[in-house]
Image: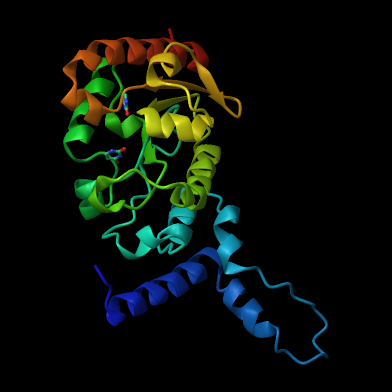
Length: 242
Ligand code: URA
Ligand code: URA
């Protein structure tokens, strides 16, 4: 869907407002300061706007600095940017693939049918949706729910890495083959991946089936239940809960 001039303009205004809120307008004034007279004693190094999100100190700052992202073509077809949802200090982080139609409409991950099932899976091992953090590899919906392509992943995955860094979970639960192969840089099958614990940097990663896959193939529900039980046990050991 082509975006009209007004909505692009309003995104630009939002972006400028966010820069002000995040950096007190310093980035904008620093750019202007390049034209200051030589007599000004303080030399100022302009910060490239494209790098500003890397300095975000909180999830809210990160969201504000990337939610108008146009680094890949999905930026201009999305309805809403789907940053992530949940507890910023979550000990369990759930990682999916990419927003679908419902998520694109609401701006929140896993709110459609797969999301309802995810909530039940989490509840089955006594996790409330609100106490975990849920995000995707890709923040904008790929048209027709196709898989994200490598260049979209390359542009978008660093945002997830930054989210993981800020949240610093004890365990990551990876949902589905695409999310797992991407985060873990592997081409192994789901059958192999779910049999053992992986690591992303230092953090343990458990891989299981995507809830959308379970809706198509209920035979995978049983192994998924086993995977999340193992995840719960490992989580509690790491968090130090009885
Ligand atoms: N599937 C995903 O991988 N993520 C969502 O947010 C929704 C469906
Ligand atoms: N194959 C997939 O693509 N996803 C799953 O979750 C399981 C098998």
